Image (tube, rainbow, N blue to C red; front, side, top):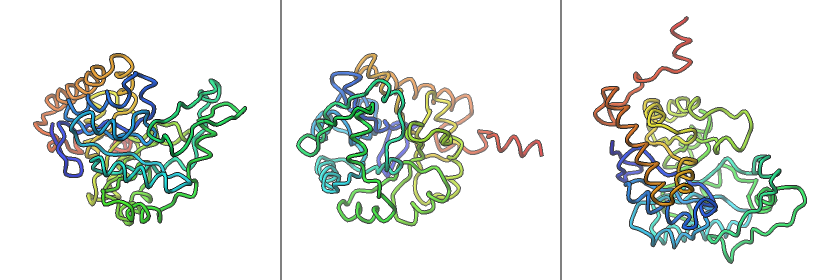
Length: 303
């Protein structure tokens, strides 16, 4: 099941997606997640809004890691975070491009969600925001995120780092082609956990559109809704290089800390291996488009 992502070996086509605020799930936070990922031979993407610092995660274990980036209005903050990641051995930058503004998260508004202080950003920006309109996370995002983010900013990002850049949040053929044109090293097909825009398409339904647009020029990672080994198999059959796991990692972390994350990754790997065996695939390279049938395929058959 082993493969490579941007040239780095991984035990399976599975990555830990960048998710925020791990200490809300477990006191050890992202450090526990990092150790579990390393133990499983899996690449972890650390969130810009992590509750452990870049330095704490980097020193927790020896492993390949990527760093997820938001672009703030104060560009110097984003630039500093990129430099810290590069200095601490992170191997790639994942630019989240689908959040020029935060989507309407009604549960956070109803519960008056208060964002904890982000240790990763200590001394750079405070999460303390006073608002009487519900979630202070929404107010914080509005104050910090750069809504003017556009394609030319890939050039700016390239100018401040030598690390390869992946762009996360691509859902259409047009954006996939543009991403290749501006020279990113990879694409992450993602709808931000379906939390940004109601009725945005499920990522599995647009994955092949992106794959066909890219035409193998850069790797495409798949994020969103992966809960079983069969889900991983389907994404690989449609052309993804690997999948990213978000919520299940947090569930495992909340249940049993580092061991819980290891268990989640182990379960997914075991399920993928069984699916491959029962589909006659001895390696991930043997998983092809003929192994899946989409709704479009079914419609074509009827015609």
